[in-house]
Image (cartoon, rainbow, N blue to C red):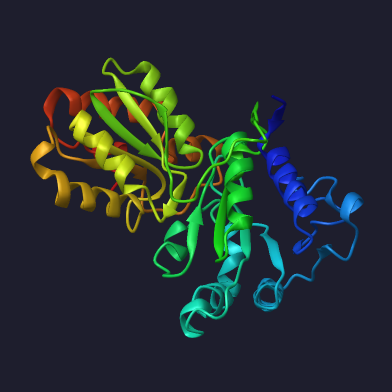
Amino acid sequence: MPAMRLRQAIATAIADEMRSDPTVITFGEDIAAAEGPFKTTEGILEEFGPLRVRDTPISEMGFTGAAVGAAIMGMKPVIEIMFMEFLGVALDQLVTEAAKMRYLSNGTLSVPIVVRASVGGGLGFGSQHSQTLENWVAATPGLKVVSPSDAQSAYSLLRAAIQDPDPVMFLEPRVAYAERGEVDTNLKMELGKARIVKPGKDLTIVALGQMVNVARAAAAKISADVEVIDLCTIVPWDKQCVLGSVKKTGRLVVVEEQPESGGWGSEIIAAVVAEQFATLKAAPFRITSPNAPVPYNGGLESKFLPSPEEVTRQIEEVMKTGKAPQPWWRREGVN
């Protein structure tokens, strides 16, 4: 199997879908001639030409709306939002138009678009370009929300997203773009299906995006036998996989990058407590970032984001006490 960087896996997935389906097109800011600000569309313009690969003005609302219209008319647009924060000016087109069109048309219309966006901290882009913002889109009926964690899942999940008949928000962990891994281009992954990336029997960690690698690094240091689940899809999330794991381990920790308030992990913990309370051996809890803007300073940013060391500390504590530990900022009296 070839080894690819995550960004190369994304470009390869787009190209493979464009080769197999002439209705697939892609556009966004600087994605054609410049091959994307993070080189995630490298080589696409050269192979498929300017009719199917287009640079757009700096108007996210405009080109997202164009994608909705093109999708209704039979195309499969894949558009790129350079930073997730820039989606704010186009939310109406995505959550009010694209996500609702099947319902509003009584099933006669579909909007098969993929909206790709780079997300997350760790590269010093500061508070306005380092958020994950899953909560902007995760509460929108009619919209699927996906986030890969490595090159293989980036390739397989993106192909699945492009083939889906309804709109998909595809959140790409920016810090992982350069990370390399083997990619089996024949391996298919389903939206809504999680992956168990490390089996275990004592405790379940559920993570997403770049936090999957953080969880795996922590699991390697923890004395307990930890199972790590890569959730892959936030909406719809794989309840069967998570509940099955927690039934086995009796303990649940969700590791997510976004701030403590409003995170997707709260829904997972609520479902586990409601449906499997009797099987729990300890209180489920979340390891998150604090409720503060992402710092620009490198040292502060590395402390802000969940780290393997912080995940290890909190899990070792819950294994000893059975109680949810305090996050680092409360232990240190910051918040």
